[in-house]
Image (cartoon, rainbow, N blue to C red; front, top):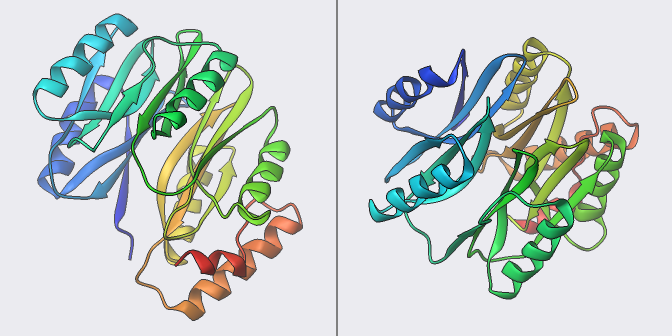
Length: 269
C-alpha cells in the first residue's frame, strides 16, 4: 500500500487549498512540478510542521524563506513555476543551506563542493529565472549528483551511481537548460525511475509502481517528458525485493524505461 499520494492541480492559485486539504488528511507536500499546463503535487504521510511560500523574484523568495525560518520551519525544496519561486518547508534539521541567487551550472558545482566540505548534502536543485538553485541539509551517508544532456546519458549515470561501488539511490531529478540533473543519496531503501510522454501515461505508471511496492517521491518535467522517481516501501518481504530488483535490472539492461535495480541493492537494508 502506498504511503504517498499525488494531486493534479490546475494552477498555482489552487495550491494552498489543495495543500490544506491534504494536511487535514495527514499528508504534507514533498514535491511540486509543472508541465503540460498543470501542476503535479506529491504528498507524504507525515507528522510535524510544514508549509509553503511563494515569491515573485528570488529576492522576494529569500524574504519569505527568512520569515518561515522565524516561524520554525526551513526550506527543503525550491520550485520555479510560471515565473514565481515556490518553497516547501519542514521542521528544522541540524543544519540547512541554500543558494543566495540562481547561479550557472559551473557555479552550482563549486557551491555543492563547498557545502559538502561544511557537512551539508545537496537535497534539491531547481532551474529557474536563468539559473540553478541548490538546497542543502546535514545528512548521514554519501551524496552525489549527475548532469546529463540526454535521458540515455542519465540512465548510464544512474547505473554508475548504483552499481560501481557507490551504492547511491536516485532521490531527485530536475530539468533545465537542456540538461537532466540527478541527485543521489545513500538511503535505507532502493529506487528506480520511469519516463512518460503524457500525464495519462505517467499516472498509469505510478499505479503500476505502487502495485509493485514503490512510492513516487520526486517528479521532473522537461523536453515534453514526465520523469518519476520511485522508492520501495519497507513493508514488503525480502523475497519480493529480490524479485522486483532483478526484474527492473533486466529491463534496464535492455534499455526499457531506463529503470535499474538489482540484487546488490539489498545490501543497503
